[in-house]
Length: 225
Image (cartoon, rainbow, N blue to C red; front, side, top):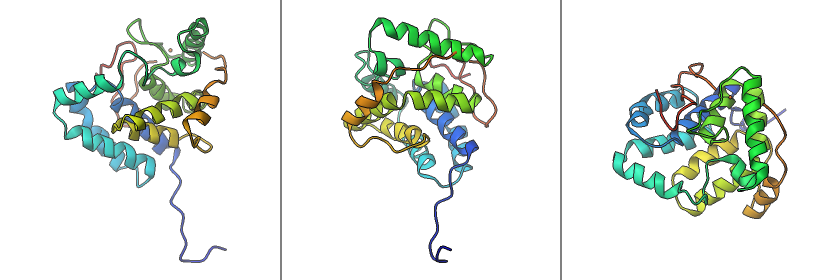
């Protein structure tokens, strides 16, 4: 029996994990006016989820973003997630790079979505775009968690890259990685070794609405309707 003065932080529930992932995915979208308009809802959903490190990390970012001017937020986003892929939000880039294998990996993710009756993103966005994957993980929690776990190395590499860039976006990746099973790699090198594992094959996405947060229309880029 544990001494009465000791206590453990309650485990984040499955619904709590879903809220963290969904909120993080929304916050990782381009910070346009639509996202700013939804920040009160995102923050309210997080506030109702309880006191957990992952919840606090996303809530901290949402509070930070809410205090930014729109133009400044947009400029920062572009400077962090630039086209040179140093901090890519596309998960297969971290495992496959710009190789032929990446096409097979993307097709496998699309097939995975379709297998669950969901519609893949349209031509404007790739199926491995992290906000899309995080929405999938709230719609199909078991397979979504598996997909995120398969890309744990890439997520951790992105986290290290964002920490190195000294950006608040690192808090979102810390939260997402914190919802996965097992310990995070301690170094970038350990994360890189993890990311070299081949992606398992698998099966596209439609609206959300199951956890009180707005649906990200997967067939468009960064829009939030």
